[in-house]
Structures are given as structure tokens and as C-alpha cells.
Length: 108
Image (cartoon, rainbow, N blue to C red; front, side, top):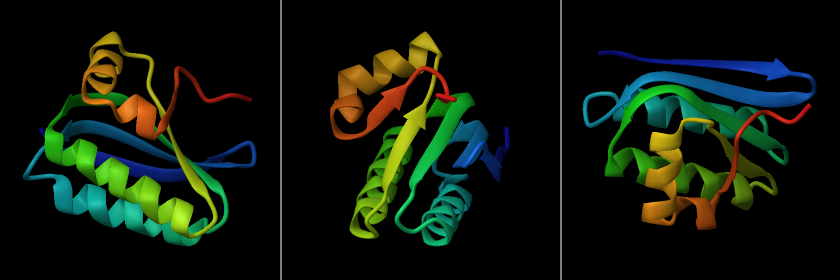
């Protein structure tokens, strides 16, 4: 499976929509896309929509945490958007939901 990332603006919010598998093979693409999105939207809240993600390994979780830290260093923030029970349970189990805000949908 591949990973697809698309950066767009929904309302006034920058959104990085991610779909596919986040694993060792796709981490370089995810890192590049997160770094680009954070850099383009310094000082803003970047929404990372993971509803299309079918697999997410520990390295992918770490990549999201790192991107959130970079966004905060740039006076912005990062919010994960996810409505799937499987990923939400993983976020709770790993503590990601305590380190990064997780919303069930993109608030409009």
C-alpha cells in the first residue's frame, strides 16, 4: 500500500490529508509532507486528517509528535483529526492524545 498526502485549505484552516499506510517504507514521505506543511503555515494550527490511514506504526506516531513540536516552536500548533475507533484507541493507549489534540472532525 502507498501513502498519499495532500495539503489544502479548508475554510481558513491548513489541512494535511493523509491516506494509506504509515510505516517504515512511507515515513520519508510523511516526514517531508509534515515538514513542508509546518513550514508553509508557521504560526498557524495545522490539521492532520488521518481518517484515510489504514495502518500507523510507532515510528509514525513519533513523526506526528515531532511535527507537533516543530509547529509549536514556530508559534503554531498541530491537531490530529481522526474519527476511526481503531486509531483513537491507539492514540489513547500510547498517550498521543495527551500530547497532541485529537478531534473527531474538522471543526467548521
